[in-house]
Length: 303
Ligand SMILES: NC(=O)c1ccc[n+]([C@@H]2O[C@H](COP(=O)([O-])OP(=O)(O)OC[C@H]3O[C@@H](n4cnc5c(N)ncnc54)[C@H](OP(=O)(O)O)[C@@H]3O)[C@@H](O)[C@H]2O)c1
Image (tube, rainbow, N blue to C red; front, side, top):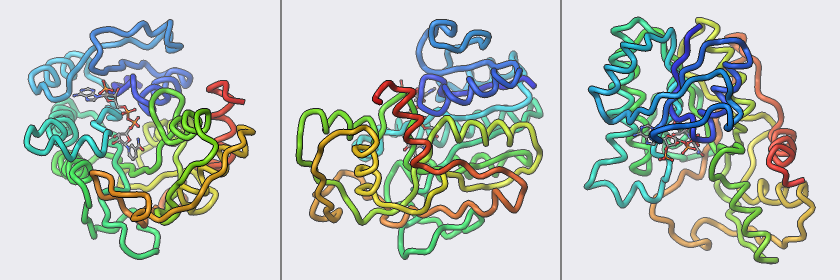
């Protein structure tokens, strides 16, 4: 299978290219950077093409030339607070909504399928029931979430053979994430406050890449929710486990979101994603998040 992956320099895109390469697929990876030494980056065998997905002509030209069987779209603007400042400039919308639309439109023309990665932020975060994959009660609380939902619509408008996979609380060795932030803070401070009223489940990119590769190799299309297993937890619970596994002596105080202070972007309290549709459609669930965290800490040399 010929696979075109966006966002290879990000947390998820990197792991997706690695997993698809390992399975013997032909991988063409892309991102904003003008070049990427795939061998040096541990992705020998995959090729790299620079592509700004907000450049419609470039998207059309490159995808038409490459003619992949599937586009796995991992690129996005992911700086949630910064996105709020960008509303007037519309850069975030250009990346998350328009960029996705351009990719979906060309995918349709060249008869490729597509995997689009979305987020728990398309929901309001009200209540405490897990959001089911087919729930359409969308109500993004912030601009990032709004633009990601527009990306979903762009996929639905154009394609029949698509996967929309909503994930949450992502961590992977290639990029910024909560685990890295906690470890950096824990090296400088012995006392930390972490919010304990936002509830969800972490998603380890290496585990998610296995599921996405399984999806790419199947035709059980649709909208799915995917995170690691191991129950619903707070950021406080996650932080406690990070310091426990890394053997760091840090005192953590659980605080509410309002005690912690306002961030620019509102965040959902209830990010519980129901993954049962994966099982219903014969996909394997991801491993427990604590196990995933251990493998992340080993992979990044933290333990
Ligand atoms: N991170 C999370 O907690 C989280 C949670 C839920 C869902 N998601 C979704 O999961 C997917 C993967 O997230 P991630 O954490 O792997 O993201 P990431 O690490 O931020 O990687 C995104 C990549 O996309 C690139 N990119 C940005 N604008 C682009 C453009 N115009 N054209 C081409 N590439 C562009 C970025 O380059 P620069 O770094 O140079 O901008 C970066 O390399 C995204 O769709 C995201 O919305 C993430």
